[in-house]
Length: 329
Image (cartoon, rainbow, N blue to C red; front, side):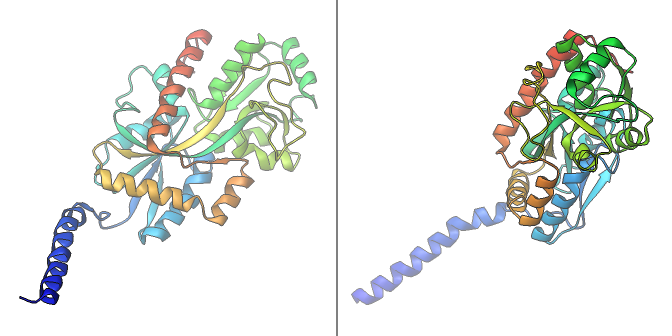
């Protein structure tokens, strides 16, 4: 038998072996379910979650050649929608796009029928937005943080603040601020950040402890005044707004972040692919421009890191709820 024939035969056998070894991997690769994919957003349309979820879903839809629909199911600080999401089919046709608020919910709502850490599979954080004290100057007669603090101290409980709902980060940001400063406010919960912001701009409430995602444009247009950010460093887009440390409240550090989860039981290859597609999408220039406009940090951290963030936030807000004695409104 010639050496050339043996060499050729080895190449053929080697190729066959490689194909055989690759075959199981191909078989394990699961396609997306036929039809549109749903991202359940547990807040009303127009809020911070929508700001990031809709363009991100559209971009990922283009990448995978499949429509992704945002389904808004607001109520009870995002817990109504989260409950519904936990019951959706874990076949890759449904995902959950939630927020930091869901790490607070276990400390506020005692009878949740889902568990953030066991009913869902963390994929990644998609955006992180600093918090800011935003006031309507037609309601609160101040222009600076010092004037604001003096006014609140002189009028305990008379200044009210809107939030997207009881148990949201905006609500607890106010509770944490009150604890740290010895001040008192009246909390006015809404069914989402959109309705809360509408009433703030309309002059029906005094202020918000808000995420920059919804306040930034209003501050730029002088419809609201930003008095202090709950950040260690000044926000580059708003260099004139002092930080919490600079105004004497160094422990008031709060951010509103948004994340993407799969439903527990979703095939791991689809979870991995959604993570990869999300990271790819967030590198697209038009999405980065949206994030920048919203004064947001681009996400994309690995699932394991996102899981650690979730656990850390749950523990943080448990302490704040216990210390403040906050109850549902």
